[in-house]
Length: 209
Image (cartoon, rainbow, N blue to C red):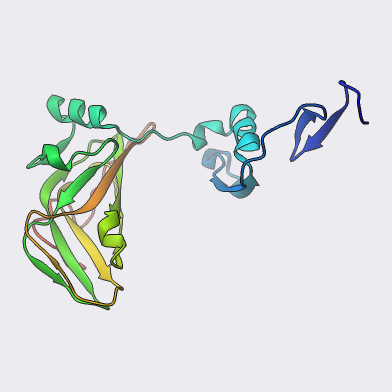
């Protein structure tokens, strides 16, 4: 099979000519979810180089499930200006290229080995087509601070309760107004429901209900 331009081989289900050299980037783990409406559990893991993942994404009938759009700084600004999204009080200093830094509503002490419920200064109101993920800012992560309960459903309204766990070697002080957690907002395709749970319209840090 050497030397012939027409020779082909199959790798992970994709045909490729042997005489074409494909860049083999380090393998990457992707989680791919199938079509839930088919009634079949088509969730599976693919261990692919980015080269082959691109081909899978291009030709798979489930490619729509691999696509998500994170709201950029301009997207967030436009939605806030139109009243579609609420983040108040808004701070330009907290705005990042593809996220927003939530600030602490008051002073807190994160004791080592404990979970502390921290209220965000901002009240957030998400529309039906936007969900959000919460992640600790890297400066806190480097000191051993982790966050739990880091997903916000479409339609949520209220201050966010940030469940911060200090697994570092020392207590950490948070000052009122300090930027603590990034909120990353993503579009939700064809969303029809909004959050109606027990933490709707939260004020301050709310413990488990």
